[in-house]
Image (cartoon, rainbow, N blue to C red):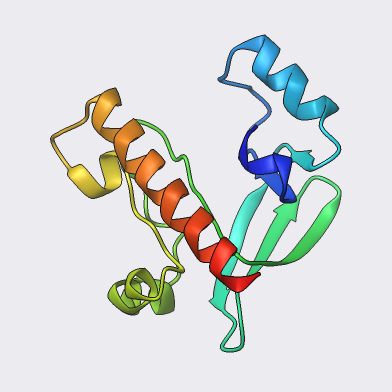
Length: 137
C-alpha cells in the first residue's frame, strides 16, 4: 500500500484465489493507484534497452501488454522460476547490478525459508527501488 502512495502499482495474480488478509485486499481494490488482475499468466519478460521491462501476459480477457519500470514477484513457498525467459535468466546478474531485477525470499535463499528473511529481503528491495526512483526525479 505504501508503494502505491506515489506510484502506479499493478498486481498480477496467476489465479483467482487471494492469499492476503481481506482488509488488505479491499484497500488495494479501492486504491486509485492500484490495478488488480486475476488469472494472469506472464508469458514474456523482455528488457527494454532504454528503460524498464516489457511484460506480455495472457488473461481470461485476452492479451495484456505492459511496459513497466519495476517488477516484484511473489511466487509462493516452492521456488518457481520456469516462467522467466532464458534471456532474463542469462542476464540475471547484469539486471540485478542495474537495479532492474531483485530476487528475494525462497528463490534467493534456498533452504532458508523463513518469513522474517523473506520480509527483510523484500524491505531491502523496496528501499533500493524507492532510492532509485527518488534519484530519477
